[in-house]
Length: 507
Image (tube, rainbow, N blue to C red; front, top):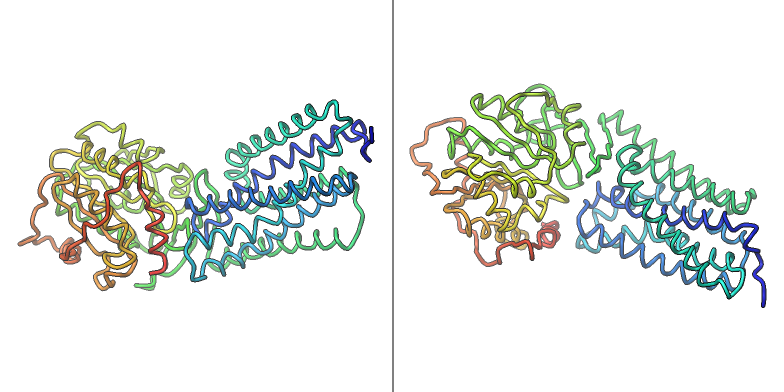
């Protein structure tokens, strides 16, 4: 029986620790990848699909290379070199992420293609090196053919347990408490340290180059963050659900300074003027259509809190009404308290829950009006809130003459209008009367824009002769054309919201 170059007893526990740690780092790297990509390409299913697919493909290539190399050069020094290289390639991710993602986000491709290119360029190289580890370590660990099954099974089990540990560590600890970018630093440092434990450290050109890449990546990332903070008062915050950027900017329409909150590159989710309590974002003013459609409302529900700009305006503008706000992300509420002036009010009840789950459990006839302002990635609404089943729950939760006022991103006509056509048909299948408003009257119908759907449980009242000046400007933006009913209603089984959104991004 031939013997492997490295005897299993001398480095056995080190190899097993290596397999466990690398299994954990692969999953941390993958999960963090979604947060790195989000500010440029969003956090849609397309991002996750590309990350998972590309990283699995890269790992497969690494398995093949590791197994092939292990048969010809079974030496622990080779494994240490590959792991050190993996650390340097993570450093390359840190160095290139902002430049590469900025360029990719502006490329004239479908979102599916953009997310694939981003995943391939930034996360495939290090994943190949990490895939190298387990077959190579297995070869080094084998003492004889008699115990090969036990050895292979143990190492793969350790790798899988490491992956499980890494998944929970990333989601429960690293993202909310360390942050996505600094977790990349940690991954690279752990890989460098692990390689040194395995094979020692030699000051070679290869190692010097890898460390230099890592140092430049960290310096560039931290320097960019510092400059953005100095120039725009920018805070980059990882919450349990999102990567959130809070910054100062000018309102492009009024020139007034405002503090804005964004979770993706295509839009600002919340904003407040720095010099007044006026609603800063135009679409939020259209929630005041409730003054016309349900002026005597007492109990309001808002799905989606973010910066809580309209809930605070509701407290000021409707002193005899209460409002319940359902915000899935507790981190958003903390951000709203820190940056957007949210304070305690007995008429404001906050629930940290998924909006769909809350609606499903809400009592019938419990609200006079439901404001919908939940957004996911790249101007899209989370699909579970768009379906006919969700709309039925809204209808059931409303009083007999209740109203839904719903902010969506879509065009009215043309290639970018698919989501509106499907969603409008979905609401019309449940509600007695449905109206559409353009937030900006001068926006072309075929352009992607903010639109407001108003759905009435009974026939909506007519605008004729209405004299409340504060709402007249809003009412003037009602769309009087026809929204085609040529797409199927959205259901829990089939709601291609992200596909519709991807098609709309180019318009």
